[in-house]
Image 1 (cartoon, helix red, strand yellow):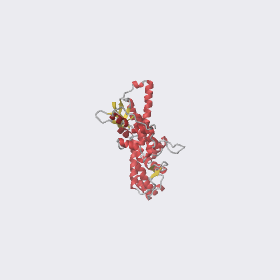
Image 2 (image 1 turned 90 degrees about the vertical axis):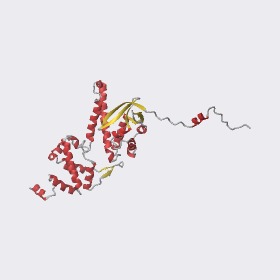
Image 3 (image 1 turned 180 degrees about the horizontal axis):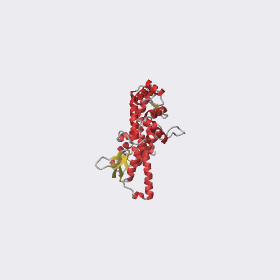
Image 4 (image 1 turned 135 degrees about the horizontal axis):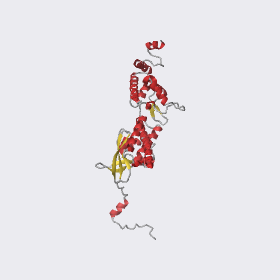
Length: 330
């Protein structure tokens, strides 16, 4: 009867070699690349270190990426944790996530290996933050991050056009070596000015208190945002902008920034048309006075009494004080 059992042929190799072959070899650690060039790129009032690696890639360090989008904690872990959040993380593409989870190791003279991301990754992160903001997925504390992201994307797009024109015309050989760097900074400063908050969250939260309305409302996507009903805009025009030069400033701002017929809203914020020195300072002084009175008031009528004591009666409002009523009748 034939023997059906299969025999194992002897392996002509040393035992150690056989053992190593049976165990999956661990991946060898990635060798850090050398940074051949190092510099400082000013973005949004920050000084970000940037590097060119030996393989030609341009990178920011992980800490710099966190600073660029305005995170309070500049640590790399905080950067990745923020981008992995449930709502913001939903706007991160698979390709971008892969890049973020696999930073580029590179050597910096006199320091431990750095963890870097290519410059394009910063742009993709900014776009993801902007998409999340547009979809109402950011919480109130992340709003400044969205404004910073918009400033970076818009400024870099403008500078890219300038660089392409310079290359097409041959002007890049004549321009100053730091011309584009300075242009990036100038554009970002302009973008930040456009997105700058002149009315802090505290202003609207206090307004909700004196009007007795809910301080937060929930958007369709589930995000909680500060409640800013339409009459808050009327309040701001009347009590903050209105007193500036007896209403003449408000009239000119409304002329420069008219309402859009289809929506009834204005394309820009009124304060964006004020001069950076005198005009804005006068607005801030008035805003602060109004905010102080709001904090001292129990309700909107209480505020109006305080306001009249400080500034006198408004032409289009019925005064709370008898002496003002007599003056208006006379």
